[in-house]
Amino acid sequence: QKEVEQNSGPLSVPEGAIASLNCTYSDRGSQSFFWYRQYSGKSPELIMFIYSNGDKEDGRFTAQLNKASQYVSLLIRDSQPSDSATYLCAVDTGANSKLTFGKGITLSVRP
Amino acid sequence: ETGVTQTPRHLVMGMTNKKSLKCEQHLGHNAMYWYKQSAKKPLELMFVYSLEERVENNSVPSRFSPECPNSSHLFLHLHTLQPEDSALYLCASSQSYSYNEQFFGPGTRLTVL
Image 1 (cartoon, rainbow over the protein chains, first blue to last red):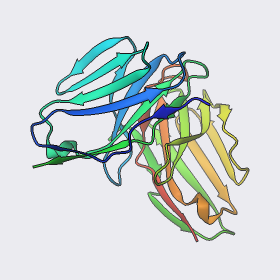
Image 2 (image 1 turned 30 degrees about the horizontal axis):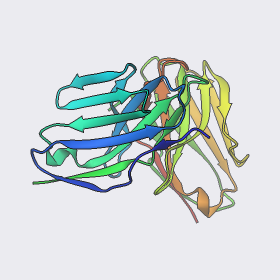
Image 3 (image 1 turned 90 degrees about the horizontal axis):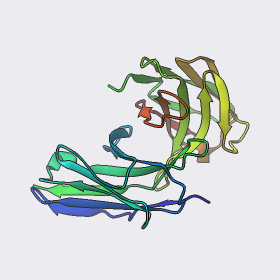
Image 4 (image 1 turned 180 degrees about the vertical axis):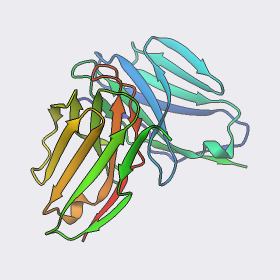
């Protein structure tokens, strides 16, 4: 059973802080990794993807991948109240190209 | 707007009704997906179509029946559902079946009475 685990949270950070969201996965053959943001009552929105070990930066967002330790994380710098949402980690094992999603972690940014 | 639309946005149905959910993508993608999202559970993949052919069926009960008449349209036909089928049903598309950046529609909030 391929699994993607995220701490359920919620995670609360003050405005301007760094929010760190973590995700672990069980399948060593996983090829690509995605972070989706889902606002309450809305559908998931793709915000980051990463394929290679290391860091990938896009504005205030940084995705970090460590395949040896089987984790992927999302850092949000200078957190804003508008970042308050549920963040879903998704992993593509490459076999059948099916995305497996974690349960998501809810982030709350306090003004 | 992601380029993926779904109708209806909300649906209430009795257990004996027949209804259909519709999804349309305007992105020129070749793969389309149906997901079920229930509270406190991960997104569950239900069906995958690639170039109008079903390539994945994740042990979904037969009361859910997908249809993909062309690469831009996807339907989910519903028949004799159960209250536990109440959930958010999300459609997604990606450029191809092997290229997994998926873009989601707004979803249909389904309530089965």
